[in-house]
Image (tube, rainbow, N blue to C red; front, side):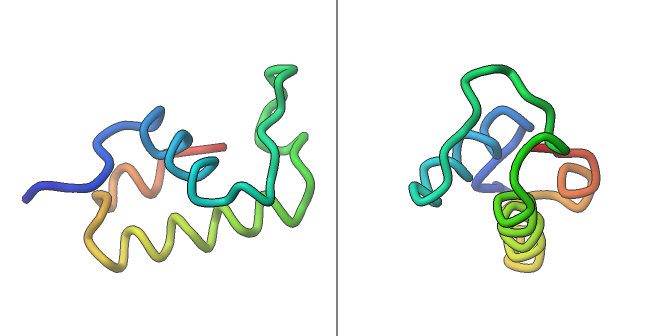
Length: 65
């Protein structure tokens, strides 16, 4: 099966492109340093990608912002 995203870097880039209302940290902050709204949107987005078979279940379980 061909997925839309195949690795964690592609997923993160895709999130920032699809969600311009959120700004990625340029300080190299970790996921838990991001605002709660950003983290929640990311989790919801990952869930939707996995449900639509755009990413593998394994990738959905390991990717972080």
